[in-house]
Length: 238
Image (cartoon, rainbow, N blue to C red; front, top):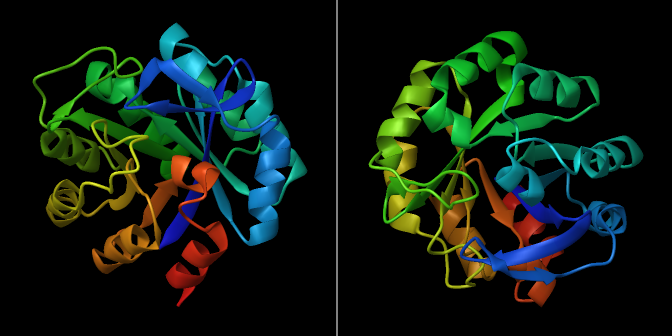
């Protein structure tokens, strides 16, 4: 299982949110590149980065930050937030980003996902964010009546190989991931599933690994010190 340390960006600065609420934004580091380098030194191979400004403005806002990390470290950079057009995808693809995460458009404009997969193949992943099992979009500010498993199956049919699942009720809470929903998802589709939200300590990492998941995104647990990145990577490499 791959550990994805996370850096969420507002105004170019790394922050963490509580349950996706922008009003709770807390700056957790001074500089995204320096933070990424620290993760790299510990042994991370991937990094998960989110353009929170982009999620709200529906366009890339902090792209320069992500490209800098991709070009100045050996890390593979996974980027989501505000990606709404083929031009957005092409920009990131040309700039060395290793995975492009489509979120709101998966529900609102699935044809764009289809076109993205056709053009960029495995570079395209889909982020499915759910509250009580139902998909939320636009930086989690809009709900829907679409069940997360149904959207995942639709994405699988389009050729999407990687799905990042976030239980919004767990995100930033340090209360443990939603193992039940993750297991249901992993058993329902053939896509690689990455867990996001609620990871607190090494026990959570072990539980996720036991579910046969592809990856786990760790944010607040690393910044608050409840999880050692080095230990998490070591457990996943065993």
